[in-house]
Length: 243
Ligand SMILES: C[S@@+](CC[C@H](N)C(=O)[O-])C[C@H]1O[C@@H](n2cnc3c(N)ncnc32)[C@H](O)[C@@H]1O
Image 1 (cartoon, rainbow, N blue to C red):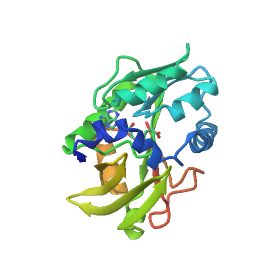
Image 2 (cartoon, helix red, strand yellow):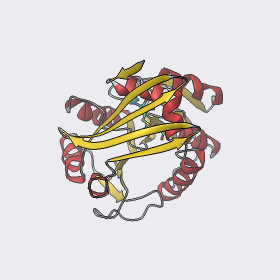
Image 3 (spheres, rainbow, N blue to C red):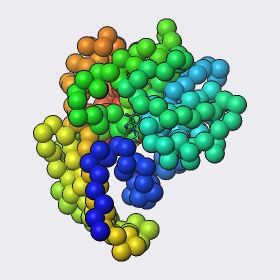
């Protein structure tokens, strides 16, 4: 049997297989990056933080451990059910679509580990930025951590197999119609699964144009989780700090 689903952001992220394939994107990585980021931002401990597209909440949980008041939102219900196990007075999770603004306002909004640019309709990216803007307090700051498409293009592994937890993931990667596509095929318990990750191949200039269109101001651009300066050819990440 073959299981397909093209509206991947409502299905693939909801499967346990996503978390197996990205096993190394774990709490330790989140802690390391979050520590670097918060040292840089130097936010008062009473600040309110929104983790937009929080997944299982790995960054939210650490930010809360640091003492911050954190809300994590994601449109994957399974992720939120999972994250809710960690809730406390200053840590809340809820199902929410990042295109829509929330009622609350925040001192910091983070959108981490390529959680932007999934939408077929380009306008939805602008809608997301507008919602971020609406949800920021007067001197609020936001962070988008995206992949560096130039680095990805120059280093694209078109096809490979990764065996993780006994599952052989056959992966194909290519650029098509302005999107970076990853096809994921594997067998598990005699069933065959086919998923597709599709993220818009946004480069630094396209982001700059979107920020301009939504009247958001870029404060810093970093190129990795150690917050080294962005280098278009060598940086793996494209991390914007903006307001
Ligand atoms: C690559 S994962 C990253 C999750 C998390 N930030 C992390 O670092 O572990 C992307 C997340 O975006 C979420 N997502 C996709 N489309 C969304 C939308 N329209 N609104 C809210 N979350 C969305 C997915 O459910 C998924 O959890």
